[in-house]
Image (cartoon, rainbow, N blue to C red):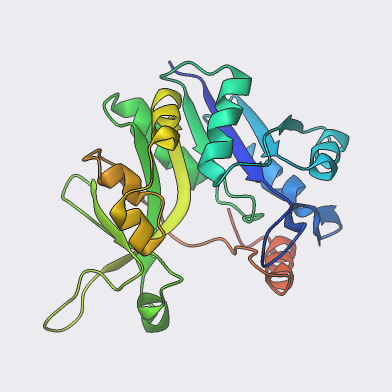
Length: 247
């Protein structure tokens, strides 16, 4: 049985919301809420915050969490995740769940589904999450990434455009949620690859994997937890926390 851990990349220098991990939400730093939710994922043996900022590192230590200091030079959360896997000492078949630091109301069943996809099929190197998308404005918006997949739930393509294009009538759309579960060995290989043409065009990191003909397992979840992208989103997340309207 592989070891399974959840890692939360947390950097200070967000362009839209600097210092977001330490923003107060219901009286506590947001990163504490994310850690608490990640700890409810049934399969995980540990939750780690991977950061490049001393303040975030100390805040996590203060509330009893486990923080890892990583390089400030990483281009993406995936690169930070790979360094964290090395610090933890994960073997190649161990599983790393990438939990986004902006989801204080994370549904722990979603990352659990991804972990199980890797546990049940040793040939799956990476899994990600999608949910049904029904709002026309979100379908059209380039800020909401869409995914199409085959009958085995293997991703065919991710795009900021509305895919598939229905020539007659309408049909199903699925929104890609940026949660991933990786085998540690695959993660180390993946972050060493240079960006591909499709990734550069769409600005979607996961296309680097598809361009190398490697399968991404898509698991389907239901419902969305509010994400905190800008300071104004804190009020929405706090209302959800107070109402306890999430799993």
